[in-house]
Image (cartoon, rainbow, N blue to C red):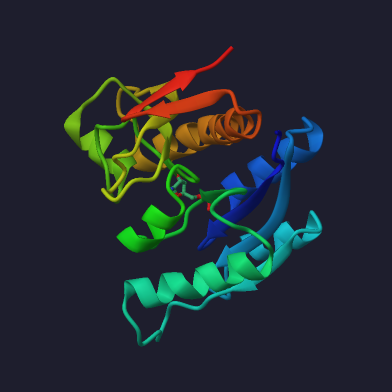
Length: 209
Ligand code: GRF
């Protein structure tokens, strides 16, 4: 049977990838139901954008939170549950969500969590990927959309897009060109998952016809 997935997007700031996903879901009729956008920061710009799409927003503030990582993640789970999002029907997109998830959370939503990273993984995981690429001197960088496993930026890869690194490129300029690619790559990955066009085999993502 066909299950229409429920989409939750986790953000911390600007939300331009969230915007690209919500726009594509609407304009390209991607078969998924955007249910809630959750931010760990009340000031995240993306919250206002989500509301413009008529998507519910929730804040699970991380600043000053006393508990451990898993205790924080359980608060996220409570929000997901409140919106009827379960490990069987969910897609959780991390879109500039600046927190590492606990292994317990990742296990619960195995193969249901996507992340976007501004480099061609496995090169330059972690923070400041664009700066790492410039400093290293690579001629191409880009972005990667992948499933989240319990490493940092290590999960099965769904979509990658390349960007040429120019002579005398700056971190700012490269970041901007990569971001434009991110805004296409992330909705594409969401579409592939929503339309059940992919299967995860070990750390490989296979495309189904
Ligand atoms: C993007 O560069 C993304 O690759 C990284 O964080 C940034 C988020 O930007 N993970 P935005 O909030 O989607 O505009």
